[in-house]
Structure formats: C-alpha cells, structure tokens
Amino acid sequence: MSRWSRILILVALIAASFSLATLLQPRVAGWNKRGQDESVLKLLLGDTRRVLANHLFIEADIYLHSGYYPSIFDRGSAPVDTKHMAGQEGEGHDHEAEHEKEMAFLKPPRDWIEAFGRHFFVTRHTHLEGGREREILPWLKAAAELDPQHIETYTVAAYWLRSRLGKIKEAEEFLREGLRQNPDSYEILFALGQLEFENHHDAARARNLWELALRRWREQESGRKEPNTPVLEQITVRLARLEEEQGNLAKAIEYLEEAKRVSPFAQSLQNQIDELKKKSAAPAKPGSAQ
Amino acid sequence: MNTVLALAGVVFKELYRRKDFYVLLVLTAVVTLLAGSVNLFNEGGVVRYLKDICLLLIWASGLVIAITTTARQIPAERENRTIFPLLAKPVTRADVIVGKFFGCWLACGAALLVFYLFFGAVSAAREHHWPVLAYFQACWLQWVMLGIVVAMVLFGSLVFAAPSSNSTIIFVVVIGILLLGRHLNQVALQQPEPLRTIVYTLYFLIPHLEWYDVRDLIAFDQGLVPWIDCALATLYAAVYCALLLFATWLVFRRKPLNT
Image (cartoon, rainbow over the protein chains, first blue to last red):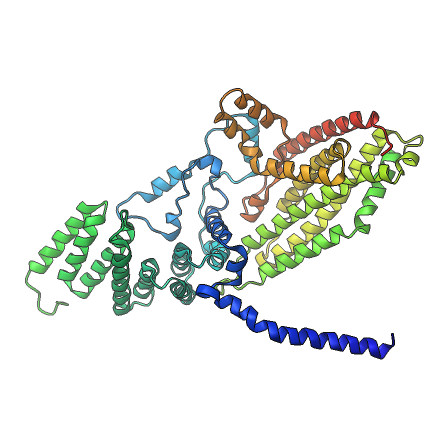
C-alpha cells in the first residue's frame, strides 16, 4: 500500500467518524430529554443511583464527624439520624446532648484485638469547624448529581454554604437548582426563604417563599397519615417571627396557633402567644411601628 | 541468603517489566487529577475527598499488584518447567518460597513508594503542608499488610488449581477481612451456639488486615498512630507471614512438580 493511499484511508476514516458523530449527536442529546428530563446517569444506573446517592450523603455526615461514625454493626438496624447536618435542632430541645449520646457507640472493648485495633481508626467524636465544613461539599454535590430528587441534599448543602462558609450566591444557586428538579418541594422553598430573610434581609421575598412553602405543605401533607410536622412547625414559627417583626401581631398569633398544634413544645409556644396577645391588647405607643 | 536475594531480584525485575504497575499508576493519577479539577461551589482548599479517593485507589492498586504478581509465580515456574533447573542444588524449596515472598513483597514496597510520592505531591499542592511521618506510617503499615497478603497468595498458589481461582479467592478473603474483620466479634455475640464459638474462633484466627488501613487517620488529619502500636502491628504481621510461609513450605515440599 502506497503512502498516499494510507493517508487517503486515514482521511476517509476521519470523515466517516465525523459524519457518524453528526448523525448520532442529536440522538445522544435526546437521551437527556427522554421521559422527565432523565440524565444519562439515570439511564445507565437506574435506581442504583439512589442507593449510591444515599451512600454519598452519609459520607458527607462521616466527613462532618471527621471519620468517627457508627457502622451498621454499631447502630444495628436503627437508621442514621442526619438531621444535625442541616442544623435542624428543635427549639428548647437538648439536641447536642442527644447527639452526643447517639455518637457514644463505642462500647468498652470486648477483647485484646478490639482494644488494639482502636489505635488504627478514628475514635474521637469531633465536628468539622473553622471553615473546614467545606470538606463535606464534594459528597453533597455528587449525591445531588446522582439523585436530584433527594431534597435533603440541597437543603443541607445550602445550610453549610450560607451559614458557615459565607457562600450565599452558591447556596442560592444550588437551592434554585434543587427547586428546578423538585418544583413542589416545601423544604427547598423554606430554605430559600431563610436565605432571603437571614442573608439578603428581604422580608417581603422571605414571606412570599414561606407562604408558598406553607401552601405546598398543606397540598402535599395535610391528607397524610403521618405528615411531616417538624417542617410545618419551622415554617409557621418563622412566619410568626417575621409577622411579629413587621408588626402584624394578629397574623403572628395565627401562625403560632398553627405551630402549637403540631409542636412537641406547645407550652412554650402558648407562652409566646399569650405575650403577643398582651402586646396587641396594649394601646400603641405614639411613634411605634404599629 | 544469596540464593534468596537472587530469586527475589528476579521477581522484583518482573514488576517493572510488566505493564500492570504503570497502568495502575496512570489510572490513579488520572482519576485523582480529574476529581481534583471539579469546581465545588467556587470553594478552594477542599482536599479531604481527594486524599480519600487517592488513598482508596492506592489501596486497590496495592492489592491488585500484590495478588496478581504473587499468584502467577509458582504456577508459571511449574508450567514453563523452569522450576526444575531452579530447584537444582543448592536451591531448596524453602529458598524458592522465601525468595518469591521477598521478591513480591519488595516489588509491592517499591510500587507503594511511587504511589505515596504521588499522593504526597497531590496533597501538598492542595494543603500546603506535608505530614511526612503520617504518610510514612500509612505506607509502612500498608506494606506490612501486603506482606501477609503475599504470603496468603503464595500459600493459595499451591492449594488452588489455577492462578485465577487463587487470585479471586484471596481478593474475596482480603476484602472480607477489611470490611468485616473488625466486627466479627460483634456478629459472633449475636449468634446462637455453636455458631457463636465458631465465628469467635474465626475472629481470633484471621489476620486482622483492617488494622493496617489508616486511611481515615490520614484523610482526617488525626495525627500519628503510636509508634509502639506500629511496631506491635508489624510483629503481628511478621508472625502471620512466618506462619503462612511455613504452611506453604509444608505443602510445597511434598508437592509433585509436574503439572
């Protein structure tokens, strides 16, 4: 075979691959739009991606505890409580003590092998701090890629981004991405409201978002046997605080009444209601917000 | 001793003639660098995931190199009939076993050194500090652990019919020990008798390879393992290596060499 014919064959093969690429490219692009905007990853992995995503989400929690984490053998069949990751401590609730108790999973060693083996893995319960919380982000991002319907991934990542790392813009973008994937999620709407209120100090937008979150909660959860009441409590309490700040005491009382119905700390909320009632009954001082 | 060293030298040279090590090194480098190039919410300095991924790949590569290199040593000598000239006096069967063991173990050590240099470079580039002693400990403990694995594979290469079955079984056993070894006593206590005694006995019998996996301590900057514990773990591994090599010799000395 002459040199020219070899070059011509090479050129012909390149032309053939280019033509095939132009033919196949629209089809490949179509893979992404099949069904409800399914990704190639979803097509390839199926439901396995949910398991993987959950594993990655747990990995983020492991990182938050600097590797000190109960294995399936340590915790038995009890699921891992990842609420502390999103800073979802209930009001008046000794969450820290409960978390410490949960993490005291290492019992005294049963034999010399177990005792000696403890020199080679992490045996101290610590949390990442001082900006090192950023170490959990890769796992949360990967978890969101694998399972965009896992809402907690977005809220947890946004919580750390905005409250500990000062990445407000990135937190908002990630939450909006989550909202695009889960348009009816009251949790993401609530988190967006928190961001607007606490970081952008935009009470009007926060109110709109929280009211929408409350509406979505009612649409999805009110008919359920076991509704997600902790989120309802958070939304209504936040709305009550906002209305109180804005001087709408009647509205604030209304929200607190709703929160009281589902809260485990009903008495504390009742005291707040009583205080607001007293405040609203008192004559308005000249020059006050009311 | 010279015979053992000569045999070990041949095995060592085989590692850098074969492509396995280079492929695994390039793969580790590519995956680590790709993982490092991801933009994570415009947040620089995120490094632990990278260290974690790189160490995982180093562990996987170390196991692959140790098991695949060792599994073919004795079967290949028998198949090619080079075992006959090799066993001509003054080389004994014990020399062959010890020579093969040291050759494979040293080859693993050399490979680990290169892998850990790469790991150190990646982590220094991102973290701007280099805990050399911690990396040395991790590398040493992994190398010591691979010694037990190499001895296990040598023993397996005389017991199992083919290198492929030997490699597969050892992979399953090693990964099983790494994942479950630490928890076998807990599992045993949940079983009824006599299963409880059997599982607990197994717990005491298996080499606890999971001790040598200090990846979490490195990734989470948890400081050094006490040196005395490092020394004791090395002694523990040496005893297991001696035990396995002795068992290999017992099988090998009565083994017909014709395939």
